Image (cartoon, rainbow, N blue to C red; front, side, top):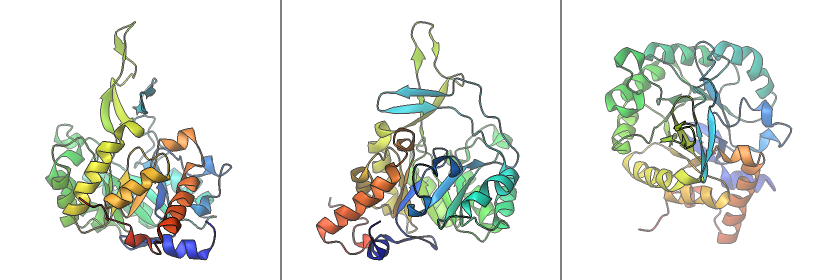
Length: 309
């Protein structure tokens, strides 16, 4: 960031959480923040979204868990994490040393688990918002993901909202027939903002052994390959709801982020690119500011949702 004027021009309000700029990290790609602190000044970021947190620690899936694909990667890490209480005791103190909002991504197997994690984090100083991952399977209802059923998505959103006073961002899965139906249901249930998309389900095969490359068989596809799908879904959802939309999926550089903003996103999250270039988020923030300067745009709100169709 060049000066305070840049910060004013780039500031965005996401469901009551004010960010100095619209660029966040995506959950699961930035660890708990400390892993990237030697590569960049974390204070520059709009927000840090930490690795998903569950009620108890999870070991995740057995290897192989990650597979590079054409223009992307498949992962089946299995939501490995230290658990919400260890995060508060061991990870959050480091993040509190920075002037950057911390968004805790949360997950659970049941609505009650989501609510308990939300409640625990709400009592922890230094957490500024929650992002609810509704792509998890609901073990009490035959394994269906919360995010593919409007009723279940609404139920978990409503539960988390009752368990916290923090802004609640609901992260949507693209693995549905109509993502706008899910978006509308969680908006009605009280979500303060939406983030989309989560990964697309994919498969990669070892043709010599005729087995999947991933031990879990399928995994989540991310990276540049999914950007056109993510961009289309963000554009659709931004027109269908009135709450802020955060664009996620295949953002590698500033031009990618600008596409999402023009399509209607108020902010963006950068994921897979962090594995390739640890400073990509900083470069994206600088690129957005340079574009606005070149176009004579004095407020990022005047860029959001300006797609001409």
